[in-house]
Amino acid sequence: MSDLLERLPYARFLGLITATDGQTLTVTMPFDDKLIGNPVLPALHGGSTAALLELTAVAQVAVLYPRLRLPRPINVTVAYLRSGRPMNVHARARISKAGRTVAHVLAEAWQDDETQPIAALTAHFLMAEDDPQL
Amino acid sequence: MSSSIHDILPQLAAGAAHTHALGFVYDSVDGDRVRIRVPWREDLVGDPDSGVLSGGLVTTLLDHVGGLAVWVALGKFESIATLDLRVDYMRAARARCDLIAEARCYHLTRSVAFVRAWAFEDSPDDPVAAAQSAYMLSTFRRRGIGSNLAAGGEAAR
Image (cartoon, rainbow over all chains, first blue to last red; front, side, top):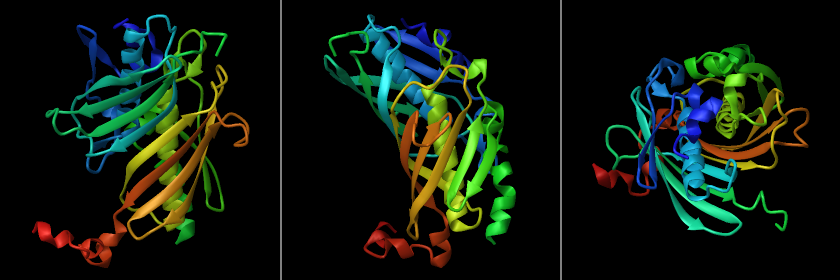
């Protein structure tokens, strides 16, 4: 499933690259001029970082729930911690609760220093969409 | 002053490299409500089996239109930064359809703007997604650097 993002057009638009270490994915969004949201600073558009986090969460949930065709978020919350500089962004997600109907996911995005994240995501995913009982 | 911010809304909606690459277009402003649109495009799809636009794109659209609503509420352009953004996905977007996003800044403090936004195909009453977000303003600095930190923020120096 680690190649999931290669099949999603928007993930390809963002140029996302997935690396797998066991069951854990690290997704990289290589810097590109088209990701710039503030040309003065310059800074990445927060939306591009949010999309990286969200797609990383989708891909990580897909690894742990292979029965889902495509994990669907119920909601996502993104906190912007630091300005995104014009360089690569990496992201990793962790499933903090894997329930029968809902999964809770935490994800962080960072640039050159993983201990200094530029954004953090909290999300809920619907796990039961293919189950007619729920 | 408010007419000048209205004049530059199309540029603010689509003028940066990212919003230009995504094809965002300014739609309209009505009082404190601002609308932008993203025309459907194959490379912005999140689910290749259904042709529905990506959730990540919807998040970007809602983040961006929220910023426009803040500038409309301020009546001027200034540097702002999204603090956080929560998006609820109410339903799947319709396949191969453009999305419109509308935002309204419903409260301003000296340093923070609070915004609600919706994404939809036809009517905000039938939203694909709804967002609640907060943006940090830079204006408060002009009222005296550190004035917002009066309750002990100076201790860091």
